[in-house]
Length: 78
Image 1 (cartoon, one colour):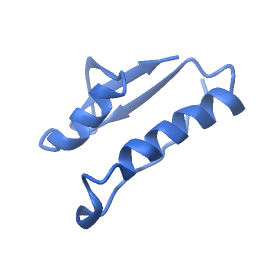
Image 2 (image 1 turned 135 degrees about the vertical axis):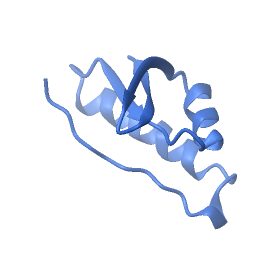
Image 3 (image 1 turned 90 degrees about the horizontal axis):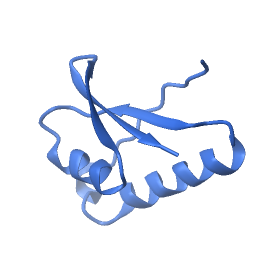
């Protein structure tokens, strides 16, 4: 299985303006177009970062019930 570790952070001064949502949407589209064999995307979110949890849940990510690096893991199937 191939994987890559990528981090996404939006400066707190620019949060809530749609940048994270747009970046996530663009990244998912990029994966689907350029890596057609990619079947899912997994990520972790700091347990206290409710904004990010909301963003990912609204994008279709679901909790896996697993923890990675002390953070809950989410998964989006394509």
